[in-house]
Length: 321
Image (spheres, rainbow, N blue to C red):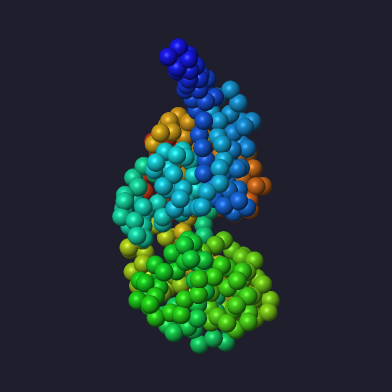
């Protein structure tokens, strides 16, 4: 009994130090990124690095961790197993409304902080292909992305709204594998949801003359944007890929910085002030070139779900909210 009492007292002292007597531990925030080497993880690591030097003495500490990506991050934030993360705006929107595939739970404790970068839809076909619009994919062999990936989910959503998902010969392949199959005439088209220029498309265009389909037009005609308002229009410039000499209209999902309600409004505000400062934005671009899309003006691009209270204050002051 005496040993048990000693152990309990020691445990209580440790807890008191971690959660009461130590400022650093009181503000330890876990930032969930994505798979190692992926874009999400670059952002988590960059913001962790920024806070190490810039917020010394504030008692705020950020720890980056890897994850499976957007959907897993949403679940981690909602359960407060992570306090910050990167997630696609579309996934956040669907999760909040109980519309994730095979998951009707409503994830309402995932709040937006700001916009990181866009991931445009890209549909690649051969230059001499009879495929002129997305609906022409019926009966065709199409690389739709890895099973369970954001690319595959977005392709399924798009082609389902067009009413042709079940009529397409779907091949669940990653970008590189799809590009190789396309070059070897094993695919008629392949789909991507990623920033441009993409290395796999560049490689395909070096060996095969390609075209990009105007998926924005097709999505608009199908009413996609009324149903899924988080998508935004983007134009892939002429010359982005070899042989594609005209601009291509498409749409993109937005990679967002999200947070748990457990994070204080003050800390969220301070982190936003740090990351979206001139020095912070410069550091983010140095970490990953996709951060060129980050700016005060783009701060809430694609956000269609509630903001964190600290973000509300920050973006209101910037005149964006």
